[in-house]
Length: 487
Picture (cartoon, helix red, strand yellow):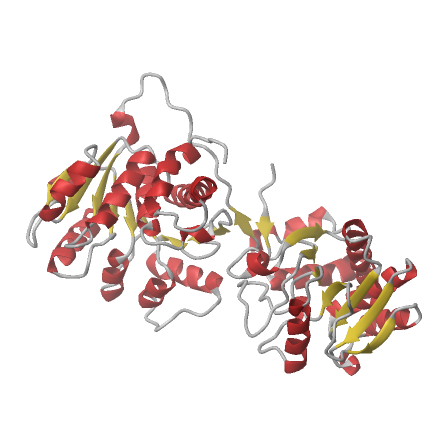
């Protein structure tokens, strides 16, 4: 099965240009193809309505809208076109489309602030043409669309949604269906995107596969969640690696405990933990399978580091002398490493190149690592810069987590909003560490771990519901997910 790919807006625009120039498909012809597909979707889904209001701006998205309006009017629908943009700014192809619309039975008029009662609303305002702050006239139209209870069909992209980041600014159309052209855009599946796009329908407009393949290296591959290979009958714990979790400063033993439990549920053969001595009884009571070692501010753990295949460093670690002592020893050991939470904060204070490491920052940790107060909305650029500066495989957490390596960037769309709760990052760290301990290469471990973390959360949400999901609920599903159990 071909891996699903998501494309940045710049690549889509280049594909559009090449399709026109190299294959001889004019912009107006492309508009006709796009409009025909949207009309087909509207007729298939909302055939009983017979009423539509098409909102048009002043870009090529408006040209699609004019032809959609004409297509519906030609089929006997009552159609109003609400002009929001300046028609003087229309491209030649969009002017041609407007002329077709004006020669149909569609009613073309300026937007007067009202929505046609009982109509299917078609958003052809901005699409990929969004640049900077949305003008007030467009905001008013978007608010009117969203205030109506009828179905909304977005043309290519809901107006107001950033095509690469998936962020929403001052206003964004909330669509029932988005008919997107050529290929799937990153923003449809990232950040705010899933809350605004509704059902996504891809219309390739007859795009030659060779042209799309020419740009495939610039797309983000969407992660799937393949199972781990079956275990041989004679297997024993030594075949599946020994993981060390260094975590849990005073008062934060739970972070290390969650990472350890997740590691065990992810198939690690042995799991040791170095934590504050005060946490020993809690660990033994909750998870007796873990081998516990208490440590103080001066203890040497190099003997233990020499016996393990991989290390998780950071959950609940803190940044005091105790944490700094352990941090220095782990970094010096140069074992395959998962660096999370305060491990990342300590790294930000004394940056070093980490070629055998998976880093798992959330946006604030990413900002510290890049010496900024905050990171901007271009998550792709942030992930690339972190990977370039530190040499590690970077897991940039968030809605649609990114995995950046020297082989490129992949994206995970398997997460759940229910994961917005304490301890989820600790579970991910333990899962990633277990995969490293079992011999998975860095990039493969990161991609597998991120995908199964999201899939396990989805499995847990099915059982527990979206509200009140706990990190330990996800721990209980990790092994099931890695084993290929159904959702």
